[in-house]
Image (cartoon, rainbow, N blue to C red; front, side, top):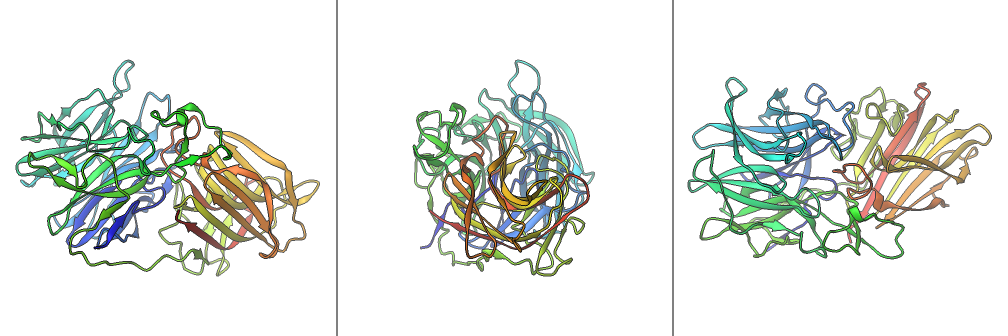
Length: 548
């Protein structure tokens, strides 16, 4: 029997929504400030997964301009009923540590096929985030989500609310009903119906080290709901050394043979030793293990667990206990159906970037990212700074393993210090490392490292390399756990390090003073802060990730 190996979606793929249509399985995951919105993956066996694009691909469907870091698309909910796919998503426009308010809007869009086209969105409520759509067996449809309370002294996570959706009028109808309230942080609700019971699956404890999944049930959809006598279905909050951490935010699928699987998010932390270049504040430590330094460079990833129903009608992990497994049995009698492996190198010879690429807060457009201006090359036109929340010229891919080597070949002739282009290791506008070519008034073209560290910009000037005589720039980033080393070469044969060894673990959810929900990204970018639109050409991006 073949097995599922977790994570099934590696790298930044959080908040999985899970659905089966016939023999096909689909996952939808959060994309936050990254474009396009809502990543979609497909499998025929739950073992092998492939990207099949994104749901929100037009700015009429999704406006991300100006959304904060880790704002944008939170926790989509994918379902299938009445011969079509239904997608609920939230666009969060105000969020962050210390923020009293959550300015957001929940939208519904549909499609006949998973690959689209997806409809223009219908605006629903704005009462809170993490909505899902439940299709009852009597034909009625219900939106269930958490409610946010901004008032001082109140529990921000003010309970789980339910309201009916009318697909004919395309509106929420009837009264909103609070169906569950708890003192613990509760979000991510999903409804299921089995043998006359309505089951409410909940994420609890916040999407960090205390995360978990709990269950409740009721004979009527509006409640009252009784909590599972086992307080938690899945968690690692009391297992700080477990390889999969922060587990929670789950959804269920039943196979054609009647087996049940749970999709959930998790993180794979780096356990940083005494020689790693990290100085971690207590906020980032596991509460049960304050002496261990750990950060989750790859963000929150998607995993699957096999689950069963107990004799008294509650959901349990197939292997018992509450801890996730890396190796999970695949569905019985399922034939392995692998997909062709994705090549590690993109030579930019296709008419458009494939689904593994993403950009910031808006679509890749010919006016700033062209694959036709110079065939076989990607041409980026410099726009705003790496701190911009509006129009960056940056395209990137998710980092999927703790060890990786990234390379590119760039041609670029800057003439002013406001013009830069190069290879970036990025978390968000507040934290990133950038190997870039720019222009210095005294030295001409120079190659060096700049960074932003928890909102503070800096330049490592002592390691600048004069590159006036270089015909092109071979750029490399080597990531080995918490270590990041940039290097460069004029010919691709003789390489020299540029700058010191850097702390790659800072590109994580667990570093810094701001709210973080995404993961490490590597890519290509260009800036022209003088507004002249200088251009940089890239011959390829090679991303070799090594599983450990």
